[in-house]
Length: 242
Image 1 (cartoon, rainbow, N blue to C red):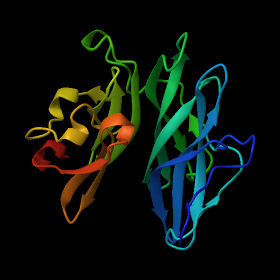
Image 2 (image 1 turned 135 degrees about the horizontal axis):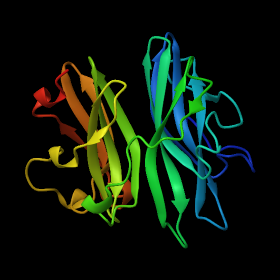
Image 3 (image 1 turned 90 degrees about the horizontal axis):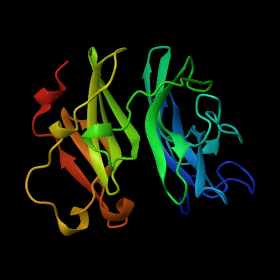
């Protein structure tokens, strides 16, 4: 197939100015692609809301589940939401996503954290107002965004990798016992060796996955990934002990 698998939505739609897929979940013979839709603004640079596209042909084509977002603005998340990551455990579905606490006075000034939502079927979602991974605060006063969560479950534990910004993009890491509170452990995420030129100022937007018993991370390089993306291999899998 040539051309995009998922194009921007109709004029005036929540995703009219762009779509970014951040998670795909396989359910029987169906693929559920969770994405953020882009709408450019005048008073603020953009608004993101969360949509869903569905494939019934192993990913060859995708169609929107609905014209409207599946997770949109609410009292719990009144500004902008993006980069959803979804895990399914039987009939229980959990989504983690980025959410603005506030816009700043100008430009890209913001306070952006990770929140969560739950669903019985992956389609109807109830968002929570609580922050699950917040800003570093005194540990990094310049940090203003934690975004693009990626979660892996192993036994009774869950592990999250995410992007953080202060103002350059970097990678972060947190863990918890399932159902407990997330604890940030950014200093435990380290790369061996010296960075290449394309990643010497930024590594960000992680996606961690297992293949034949080994864990890998796809990640973006400098400039929000403008320079390319890389693949890293986890050298100490014992850090993901159940």
